[in-house]
Image: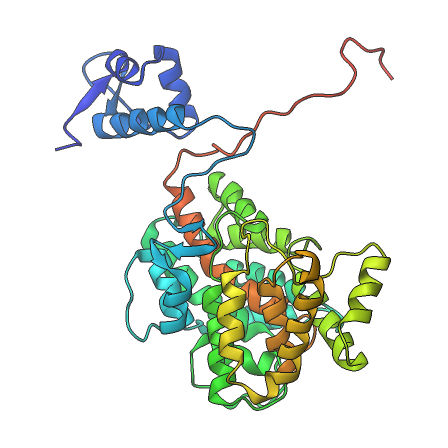
Length: 408
């Protein structure tokens, strides 16, 4: 029926509240599609498409104006020191369901029991070859960025931005990223597609126990999304330009490379290792503060109290005997800094306890974070693909010399 309802340029302009010339500007930006009128000389427009653009424009005009960029999302809500995925308590969801199932919930709003992600042979082989060619000192985000690029080239359908195609790519990309990472220990679960089990031997050479694997899976599920972090905003900017999902994930990984975003877990790991080595938190905290450095793993701008992700992971780690020393060190750090109303523990400190107690390297927290957050980045890309293209275009405030200036 919608295909039969066509509007003239004048009718479309009236519905949108703009001049006829602006209607054709919408066409050039990809916001509307036009068809030549076989009878008249002008163009016609799909009525449903024009009405949807009019509704979207009204929503954007009604949005509150502030100094901060505001982006509509139906994925994650953070309020009152708790966070929610599609309205469901995220900690409760992550505590009950595996990472893959939580990812599906974020993507589709449904929870398929026993969801599994599988890496296709060709993209996985391409990603492994690309990662193997990197220098030995390459970091985890270096490897993941290269793996994403290689997997993208091996996927001829990457430019299909339909929801079905993007979700298909996502379910293949995440296990491809994990499978491309070098194995540190015996990979005893070559046939097990669960992400936590496939990731474990790429983080440590130790054999896991069921409780340790459950803690890793919980960390992945807790970290799936967290509103508009810097990396997520980078993903939405790329998706706004209609970059394919692999490119959008690459944008997120690029932002994650920044020391103020992705490196916090590594710093917290090293600090806890120093506390355990010295046997007390107070001298370590004192040295950080004396050097003018921030104590890592503490505080979060979105929470007044303890980060709920940290609380959930700490509670799970209580069941791991090998985690007891690192857990005690983390709580001692929080106690020392909290004597004068200091900051509370955040998820980076909890991740440091997990990685340190399981014999993982300092950068393992970055790997866990990046793999987990890939699912959230895909969810945000899917949302952005439904918005007006190129809307992430702020105006610059020029501060340079006013023209005319002499030719250099």
